[in-house]
Amino acid sequence: MLRAGLPVGAGTDATRVASYNPFVSLYWLVTGKTVGGLSMYDEDHRFDRMEALRLWTVGSSWFSTEQGSKGSIAPGQLADLAVLSADYFSVADEEIKSLESVLTIVGGKPVYSAGEFAELAPPLPPVLPEWSPVAAYGGYYKPVTAPAVAHSLDHSHGIEHVCHDRQIRGGMGCPCWAF
Image (tube, rainbow, N blue to C red; front, side):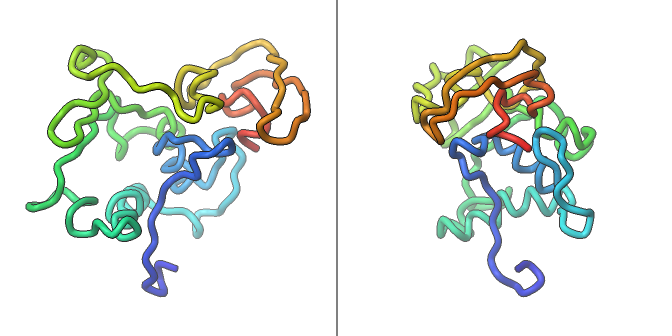
């Protein structure tokens, strides 16, 4: 699509099968791997980090009809920004999915902060939708090893099963989340 000159943007499905976390999506675009580490695409079908980020920013601004007002660091564009836990352009590929914002500013005001910036942000809004895994696991992808957890997946297919080692399952706690 890019070679044909068609508009392309990147994002998440942000559903029960995808994380809202942009860094999980950027990891996928750059490595071609699922959060569980399964390689799905060869190098010819992956993006370098700059292009993946451009698709998330400039590319997606076209789809929201906001090109020219957001998506770039340029005069006249919105100055929303995120200060990250590490440098997206220099961390190892496997660390991309673990990046986090430590300070997010929207409209000139902090809307999220952590660590040394913790006192700057207002309280977080409630997790929506309520069934989001963020509510159950307290955040986005984090490599955690935990004992087996039994749970019902009544929101998706009604099958009861046991999810084993969360690290093996991509840190999401359920094989429905990652290959």
